Image (cartoon, rainbow, N blue to C red; front, top):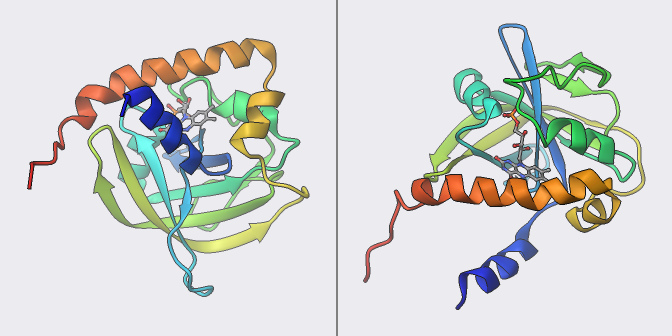
Amino acid sequence: MDPAETYDLLRNLTTPVVAITSARNGKLNGMITDGAIRASIVPDVPRLVIQIHKWHLTHEIVSETGRFAAHLLHRGQVDVVTKLGFASGRDTDKLAGLPHRIGATGCPILEDCYAWFDCTVINRMDAGSQTLFLGQAMDVGRGRGEEVLEPAHLREALPPEFRDRYPRNLAAAQDRARPLAWLFTPTAG
Ligand SMILES: Cc1cc2nc3c(=O)[nH]c(=O)nc-3n(C[C@H](O)[C@H](O)[C@H](O)COP(=O)(O)O)c2cc1C
């Protein structure tokens, strides 16, 4: 199948929009993912997997500290996506102006969100261009909002300047990821 068609099919597997926060030596950071999935069906063992590209500051911090907090966002939080998902924490303090407190693992917990999961990394998988971190939630909370922010809603609600930047950023990330993704090439048979 044509790779573009394949990717369109894969996009059906994107998840709700999630803000990942992290902290190292007093530096607080946050990013956005739409690839965070439930990794346990046992209610008293809450686990999730997040996928982070290797060049992000968040990757560096989570790799080193083994801690992250994942936040499901609600539909009124498109501004959180524009703050955390379009610039690197290497260039700016993205948590400034986003009300938060420090959670049990030392990561920032956003005051406003649909729900949060404060996690310790219990396993990780090298996927070439990204690392899949398996987190166990040490603390969980419900914020406000009636509906989680889905990628389809986000695309419609993004301000015009970000609506243009989003596909450009995605294309740049795909170019960066491609040679790293090929590090793991399946062999025939
Ligand atoms: C809707 C949306 C989804 C995203 N999904 C991912 C993702 O699944 N994995 C990832 O590594 N980056 C993803 N990003 C990009 C990062 O959030 C973004 O590059 C961020 O600025 C990285 O920040 P950092 O360098 O401070 O960690 C996404 C961005 C947006 C806007």
